[in-house]
Image (cartoon, rainbow, N blue to C red; front, side, top):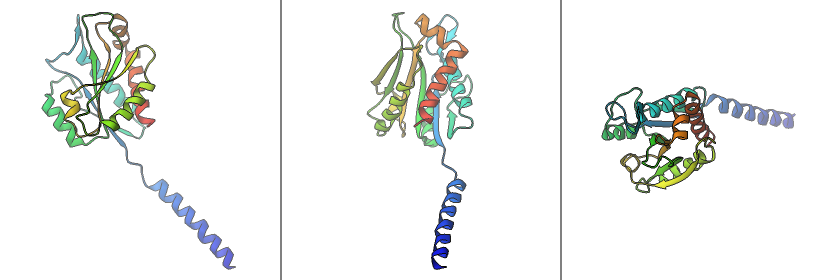
Length: 202
């Protein structure tokens, strides 16, 4: 009888542990997306195509695709407005995210220049954690744009944010192939999903 009671107690203990594991929600990963430029600051341009619009479209797609996943995506700007670097940094630091991604589109006088570049800053105390996420984004990149990998740069938004921070230059607006892909809805969706999958599969 004592053995049976002991068995029931052990069984009950594991049932309780199981209930507790289901009842305690896992804290969501907080991802802040900074869509570069905005408002009168158009960023890179090609004819009537503006970097600011592509940045925001990709950012919104990441947020939309994140629904139902264990990640909270917050946008620094949700429409075509100009936000100063100082205000961006203040907002980001107040949000205290697990990761900041600043989305940009590159440009060059050389129309053959192409590919995705990811920047980090060693001036940011969390840069080693940022590098872990960068590697995941690199390994999960889209096939349509060449991944050129990591580069170090002391961009203001990278070195002054108090969280792991990366700037993703998704491609070159000045390159015909990159431009065609990044201005298409399908291309933007692919980029957004590749970034989100890299983060959520951490």
